[in-house]
Amino acid sequence: SEEEILVGYYCGKTMELADLFEFPTNVKATAVQYLKRFYLSNSPMTYHPKPLMLTSLFLATKTENHYTRLTAFASRIPGKKPTTPEDVIAPEFLLTQGLRFTFEVRHPFRGLEGGIMSLLGLAGGEPGAKL
Amino acid sequence: MKDSTSLEKAVSLRNQCADSWKSNQLGKAYGVVYRARDRNSNIVALKQIRILPQERQNGIPITAIREIAILQSLRHINIINILDVAVGQGSENCSDDGSERRSEGRGLDEVYMVMEYAEQVADFGMAREYSPRPLTPGVVTIWYRSPELLLGTSHYNPSVDLWSAGLILTELLLCTPLLPGDTEIQQLALIVKLLGTPSPDSIAALSAIGCPDLSRWRREQLPQGRVDNLERRFLSETTKETVRFIGGLLKWDPDERWTAAEALAKGRNKNAGEAERWWRESPREVDKDLLPTFPEIRNGERIGGEMVHRGTDKISTRKGKGNDGARSAKGASLESYVFDFGTDQMESQSQRVTKRHRIR
Image (tube, rainbow over all chains, first blue to last red; front, side, top):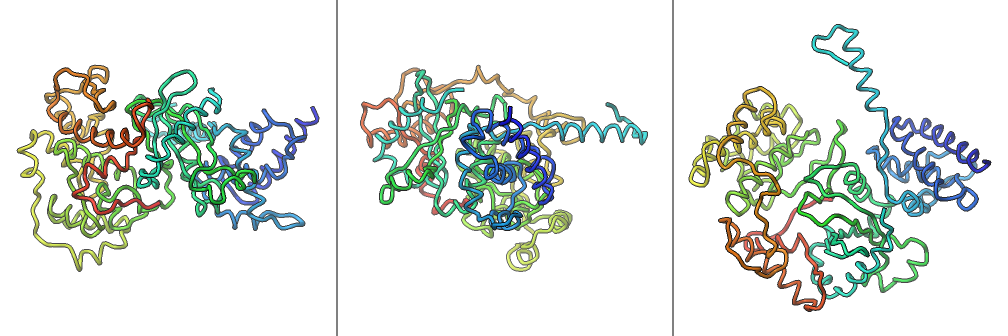
């Protein structure tokens, strides 16, 4: 539906924003997941995804152990009008409730990294390396 | 998933306990834990996370988020399961500017974690996922802080927990904390008194991980030529294998300290072998279900029957006192009572403790 397309667009935007901040992959992916999860039970007609995109990215830095100061985060957000720290955290409570406090997102990245490492070990002829 | 409204009753119970809640302000920094009954009459534990205004500048504090996220991600028989998270609103503390704030939609003064009611590890208030980023040295109650933390390093690893585990084992043997220091320097002095002066190798190892306070401490405070008293201190209490086990965990050099796997006798190296001898020794470990339980401790009254365990009497009188206080404070009609880990400990150790260290 159109709502899905809109959320999808902002998921893409979240990833661009995360790249701008040079956040690690897990922060980026978690922020996207938060946004998607939030709109499982809410409609973008009620809550516009744009402010929530910032909040979910900021929340992801907190849950994924990549601490960033709120003021520093807000000041680096591009846009015609500067973003204030309050803009970022205003929907935070709404978001955490929409997520029902399930902050944990299980990503395949860590396992993937381990798989690549054992493949490299195997290719390098490391003794005892196995898949 | 249980919906949060099942907590209404529990939360209102909390409000009925307002008097004892006030007297429990001591445990404020720790979060207060309540026993409550949910809508399906299951007994649950409620842990209150208070969010203080000064912690708001970064939104929901990262420690609260971490605690919830980490508890959710862990599934283990010895770790409590978090059933739900609920949000309470306002309290007498906010009543001066109270309800207005609520209507602002920022009613995030209290978050409750609903947990199974069981004897399991539940406090992850200071936990974070391990990563090689620099970490804060000011963690852990000072009594259980390992030497490298006391010396201010920010590059430590899980071996700090093995140090704490060793001290907890000694505490179980002695029924009293082994090294109750008041300041970092005093704590280090107590460690020297117990383990002797660290060897040059250990000092080199500590300086290699960048302990900023090491050189000053060596120059000003470190006594020379103290001997290791661990064996003398504990041989009267316990067996030689236990002393060796404790000694393996209480090592100055974090790399020399046994790892968790070694302490569990997993693996084939020398340390694991020594640990295995301890695990093999009598009394052997017992399945959790076969352990004696002491419901009278929780209920604050004796159900009868003999006390089996040697240490039980001590514990039950100690805990009983704490419960009686809470009970009388709020009358007998309520089934649930307030307990507070902070006060409980304070009471049992009131002679020793002047203040508790916990840096947020």
